[in-house]
Image 1: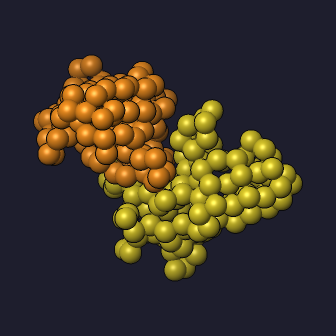
Image 2: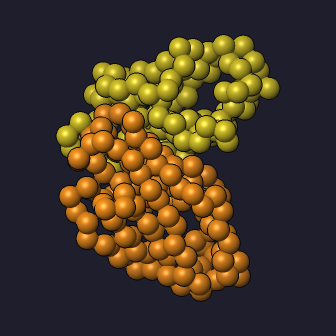
Image 3: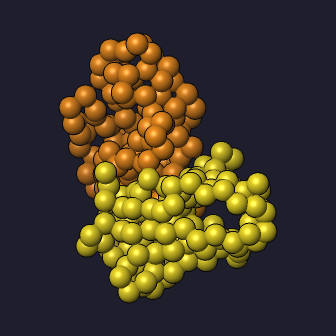
Length: 115
Length: 116
């Protein structure tokens, strides 16, 4: 069975602080994909990143960076110099069925950036 | 804007009723997925269609059904509605969604269903 755990239910920081959102996953498959999605207050789900299990290189996109560590089954997301517009619920998701079984989502982390 | 459209945006109905939610995938995408987001269950995969055929089933109730039409749009039918069916229903699409080659799923804006 697959499982994604986002232990941080809610995080509140002041603008310009760095913040890391944790994601731990469980799967028996050797090939799998990990995703992060953002759900702003407006409600839509916005795709942020996709990573496959064979690529452990960290990725940086502007103020966003992702740290994938297979040894600890973690795929953490860091926002540097946070901004109020980053306030949202962030979901980590796992796909080990090749998209044919849907995504398994974590419960989400509600990130609040205070001005 | 993901390119996935869903209608209606909001739906309010009564227990026991039946509703239909509609989804149009991104241009070129063949796979459509349906998810339910509720406070107690979180985001749960319901069902996937690929090019008109059902490909995978998740936690979909027997009262719920879906189909994908030749023009690739999809409909999710919810019947004998209960209070607990109140949720945000998302549709997502991807290029193919095959077992060995997953594609990124892009989500629509969702339909918020309220059952009174």
